Amino acid sequence: MDLPLLITDDEHVPIYLQIVHQVRYLITSRQLVADARLPSVRALADQLGVNAGTVAQAFRILQQEGLIDSQRGRGTFVVPLPDASTRLSSRQAKLVRAVDNLIERAYALGFDAATTQHHLRVALGQRVRTVPVMLVAPSREAADKYAGLVTQALPDHVLSTVMPCTLDELEAGVPWVREAYQRTHFTVTFMFALSRVEAALRALDVDGEVLGFTAQVTSETIAELRRIAPERPIAIVTEARNVNSALVILAQHTRRDVRQAQVLTEVSGPGAWDALDPTTLLIYTFGMRAALAHHDVPHERRMELAFTLSEESVSRLRHLFDDRVAADA
Image 1: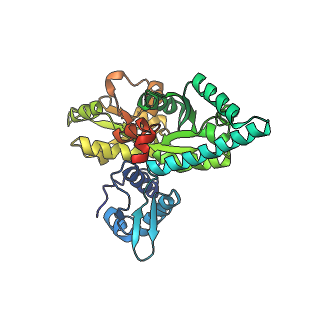
Image 2 (image 1 turned 90 degrees about the vertical axis):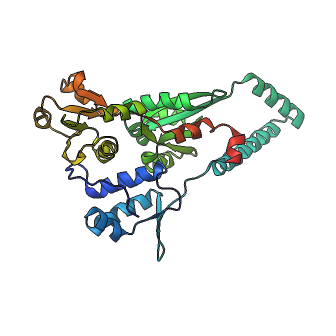
Image 3 (image 1 turned 90 degrees about the horizontal axis):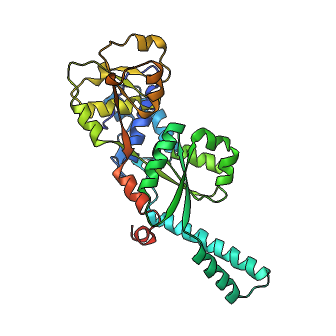
């Protein structure tokens, strides 16, 4: 089985990382389902026209992230992601421990079962069910944007507080993050950042649950891409880690040879910007807005490659606090 991967001569993203980024996206967007068998290292290297060692390096990273598993004599397979019922069982076990601790403390204070039950019932009746959620993203702009989208996706019957946080803030363990995790169990982040976020939480000794989400191109953006005149020069303006994903999207929704498109990233120098044809349409991702403003790119030459939460991610978030749905999933 050939994988729909696109390898480019990108000086900023090594080929092994191009493979990692694209295979990770195929898995996290469920285009490669659990237990799907991947091509062998040699077969994928032949398909892409690259060295087998490069593919092996990419597979090692994906295995370290827990996305694939290589089994001697059988092949390499996509690892199933934790399902809702498994997550619910884990949370129920933590709830039992928390209730046990509450009862033990109440008894230590000299109260009997009836008094303890009365105080618990009164407290539950007076408290609004509020669930704090940490939203972790690579940049402040992305954190703020997706915190809003996650807030909209969470069920209406639960009052949720979604706190935007950057990966750097989480990994540094800044004071407000440490304090927030005293009362926060759920962390939501991009699927590609899942392993990094989990490692950061382990370093902070946080016993919580990390939920990964994926993003998809909006239908409005797809319609705009299809309307681009075939003769108009285009350039991709995105973070280096997203170059290949952006090119694949353009290849899917335009009739262009995207290998000929110019590429600008956060490490491109002023000369690359100055060399652009003045009629070039700059197709950019959210995180590059500041770069466009810095280089005074007029709005009529800009087109955002806009993303939103995937439908699958929205569905999982809406069912997150519905124990009946989770139990039946």
